[in-house]
Image (cartoon, rainbow, N blue to C red; front, side, top):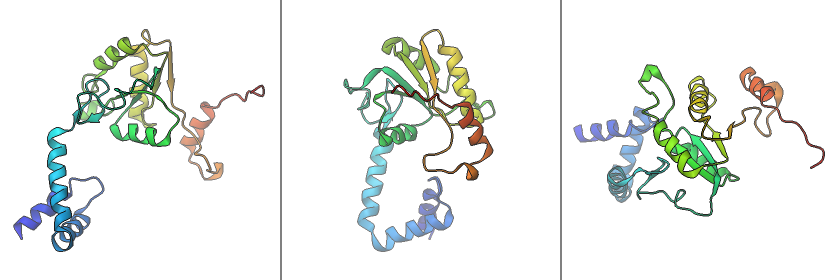
Length: 199
């Protein structure tokens, strides 16, 4: 049973997977899908050895440069700064954005020992100098740390970019105001836009 316990414990490293879920996964693979388990272990081993950070944007890729940075059809006037590779995936799946990205792999958090060096802000400044975007979009999360990170970055790069913007936060599409929390409503009011009747 020691090996089964090791497998269960290993699966609990995944976010949102507790001991019961890990046990269910382990037993499923051992009882019903050994081929799937072997395939998973092979791909996991390969991914852990071969996936790295893109040397340009720090997104995850198995190549030296990720497919997004390598795409000449993207809009070089836009550079979007995000906290994680998951944010890149979410924005790409949402559609509508065709610029380039820079991934911080975190947010400023002195308590956790995460400062400007850990976020690669020197590399961000180099990327801005190379790309010379017309607009830098700060798409960090609307948390205290995310807001502090966006504010810090805007101060650091203010002389490099003519326009720095922050993603809007507010009432979700299809949401109702009466059920929206106060913090979200406050952000929605502060980030309001004028309606242009000439369009």
